[in-house]
Length: 263
Image (cartoon, rainbow, N blue to C red; front, side, top):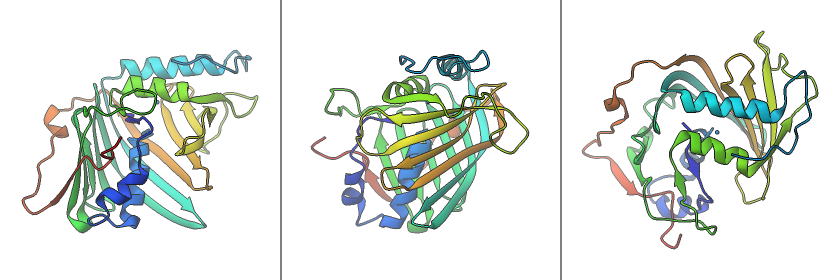
């Protein structure tokens, strides 16, 4: 699932829940929101020249079509962040069910969880026994008058390609770009308006399935985040109860940590 956060004031996240969530913990939270964020996929194609009978616009069209038709999936995910020569890693299992239901169970850090039924997003951090509860239907808008949250995955995907210029990263497409023997279309994305967040991205799209298997995203300070999905299973049977969250009796709860009062 892709959860589009429209100009969400993530900088206020630290201020809002600092008494409960330390800065180091907040870092992975922001990364995962991008993943849920990957955070993490209609626009005009600005680069339409053909490459081996393919064009960026054709690839994007097929990616959108594939995701719109997808009922569910499970996959193992890996997230790596490199910042000032320091590397941190996370991994776990992701589950998605249309429309807009997600569950990210972490093996590293063990016990952490992100889950949403499409209406409420829960972010649980085991180390400090705290949980953020975000209402995704909250009546908040950005400066353009658009809703901050857009939980429907196809719509979130459309927004990604609307907010970024995109083109092939090289002339030869598809190509063996991930050292796994498979062919990928690699799209290079650049933020149309520099409004913070990830300014540049590389999307690795499986040339056979049109699934986005890997994303490498870089912000204005050079911080690089790589998100990769492996062992993906399409359209498995997934119970709706998988996306329910049950609060532990002694967990600290922070309501709507991703928006500010004056948003």
